[in-house]
View (spheres, rainbow, N blue to C red):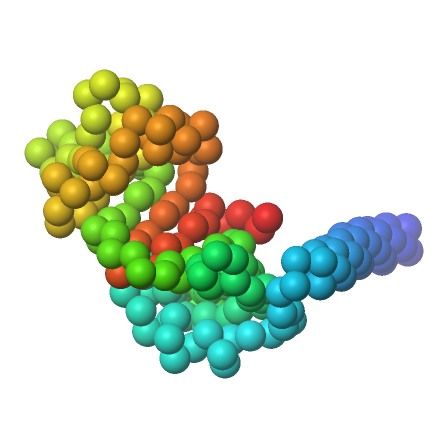
Length: 201
């Protein structure tokens, strides 16, 4: 009898802890959503709690690396507006890799800028990881800057037009990214996408 009571007590405690964690997460998400709504209103931006359909056609079919990953793409808590001719979209983006027990869902906040009259060279800037270091050993290095070793240590910059990218990533730009770890930036024509993988802002 004592062992049965112990088992039930353990199960009850487990469910209580799990329920508490879920409740805290729900309340935190609710509070965050309300704060984003207030921020959007103060900035004169529109807000949508679920904007997947609106983003689908243009964004998920783009060449951005982030949107090519996994499946089950969703956009939530979308804020949209404009400043000085630049369209701004801030949103939480979700995708899933794998399936069943091997699935993993990623969530990150992304900033998508559509620039007016801009013609930036195509590039992909991301934190340098373990496999990138192996690629360097195999002679497949990205674009490095000898006078900014800290940037080259933290980031992998790739793009077809190296000369244009070296001009774009001047000393001030390189110093900016040195101070912000783990940031991913993708350029697709007149659009710039910023995010930290797996990070909700």
